[in-house]
Image 1 (cartoon, rainbow, N blue to C red):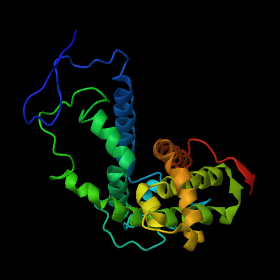
Image 2 (image 1 turned 90 degrees about the vertical axis):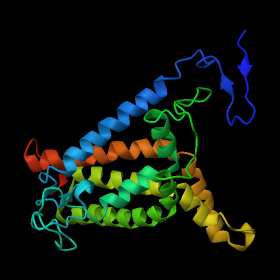
Image 3 (image 1 turned 30 degrees about the vertical axis):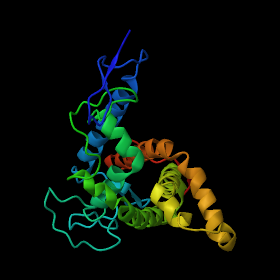
Image 4 (image 1 turned 90 degrees about the horizontal axis):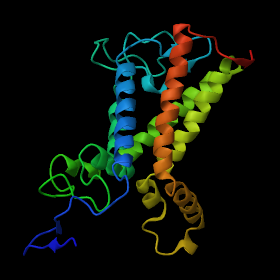
Length: 262
């Protein structure tokens, strides 16, 4: 029989066994670790490649390089000018990438994901934390998780920019690239709007929904998306990587775009 040992003043139960769980509890954090690590590696390489990000013939611009702001931007890819120098450590989308990274890092779902997968804090339910002390998000650097609500506003602006990129790509006809860019934008909006901060902004402080019917309808819509926030978090990682890879393949000349209307 397993006994539970308690200490006066202890903040967590001291369990003699590593865990009482008999299932493969380690599989979920392992998959999360592998998935997030692979995506971060791919995104990092692509951001600092500084090439194969724009297809001039069809105005396809990968979201990893939007908006393009350095003076090495290919002609036609810089919608907002080129105020940044072409130093290799400066990404083309240097003004937007930090905000997108902050939005993802402080996302409620991603916090759970990387806390469990990378920090083992805790690795799973009913499994002891790998750290001796628990301070929550009250100390540096986790105290900056409270910036999530502000990162949401920045992510909304960036989603508008990505939407414009998708709309602009229809100026030369209609191809598979348009479908991929548009689908990515739709999923990005779904993920952004499913954010807990967006749900709170929509109706979190309303005391009488009946007096705010428009906000109530929007809150209801956002709440449905919010129930799928974890799924959308992973789907958008996939659509971002797929969109970038497809644009890269076209820009590098690996294969031509499938055109439906020229």
